[in-house]
Structure formats: C-alpha cells, structure tokens
Image 1 (tube, helix red, strand yellow):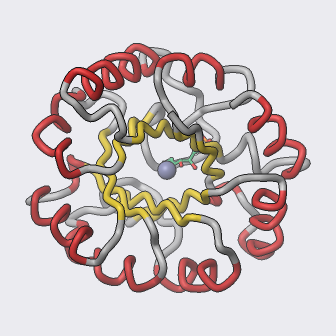
Image 2: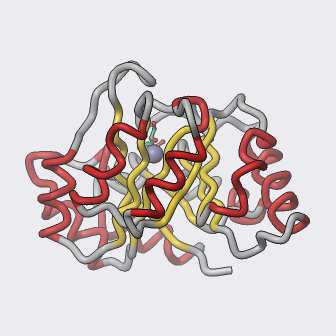
Length: 217
Ligand code: DX5
Ligand code: ZN
C-alpha cells in the first residue's frame, strides 16, 4: 500500500506559512495535514477557512483537513470550497455521521473519519463502506508536540486487520500524534500508511526532517 507523509502545519511558523510548507513539499511531502480546532471539541483554537484558501493558492499538495470541530456538518461546504481535498471529522463530534459523510461526498471530496485515542475502533465500523480514510489519533486531539500513546500501536494493528477482514484493504489508515523518526517504523509496521507529523517536521531543518521521514517510508 502506498505510504504517504502528511506534515501537520500546526507546528509551522504561521507568519511564514508558505515558505515553511514549500520546504516540506520541495523535500517530497505530497500531502499537508491541516488541523482545524474550534475551542469546543478541543480546548484550543487553531485556523479556519481563510488560511486554507490561502494555502490552496500557495501549493498543489493534497490538503488533508482534520476537523476537530463540534457538529462538523455545519462547515463541510465551506471547507470543501476553501480547497480541502480530504475532509476528516470526529465520530464523537458529529450528531449524524451519515449526513456528514454524504455532505463530504456530495462536494466531491474524499472522506475520512477519526476517533480519539480511547474511543474503540468499532465506532468506525458502520461507516467503512463509505470512507476513503480512517484516522487513528495517537494523542488526545488539541495540541501538537505531545508524546505518542503507546497503546496506539495495538489499535493500529487491530484497525488494519479489521479493514483487511471486512474487505476494505484499500482504505487509507492515517495515524496522527507524537510520530517521530524514532517510532515511525513501529507505526508503519503496525499497518498505518499515512503518517502525520507536526513538531517532528516543522522544527529545525524542515527539509532535512522531511527527507529523514521519507527515507524510512
Ligand atoms: C493534534 C493534531 C495533530 C498535531 C500533531 O490535535 O491533530 O495533527 O499537529 O502534532 P505532533 O506530530 O507534534 O504530535
Ligand atoms: Zn491532526
């Protein structure tokens, strides 16, 4: 299965976003992970539509938008119109997951669904037939730079096995939170094929960090 690196711009310098992002994409990153936080589903507030619109003009990378937002249905059209390619929402945050999936698909976008670290993977099972991607959080959503929760490895393994067993072997399995060059191999071996990394990419030498990740993938 194709392995993809999705640097999370949450740890980039927002005053120099285009240049930070270009360092990662020039070094080979094909996706950019965009964390949207509403201050309700998670304590923090990050970025919204205008930043995604500007980013869309600045890069051809796949924009992988992770909505940490309560009642995401309210905003799907606007994120799609802003330039998201993939929209991922939290199972715990939606009142009607089916409606959110339908809305994302109606806008012609790829659809991902995600759960917090301590939500059981079975919460995603009813929706697998319509998902392009499943995202497993390996930290509590809300902040970059947290430590990888070790029990995530077993969860990734179980999710990959469930996807294979249920006939969704082609569904992307993304992992987000605390991935560094030191635990990347563990996460990949467990069955993830899309890797989010924020602080490990956007600190120090962005190009060198990106290359070091890609060499291991
Ligand atoms: C956390 C975000 C992550 C975050 C990851 O809520 O969803 O995407 O940017 O950052 P690191 O890689 O530093 O854990
Ligand atoms: Zn994220």
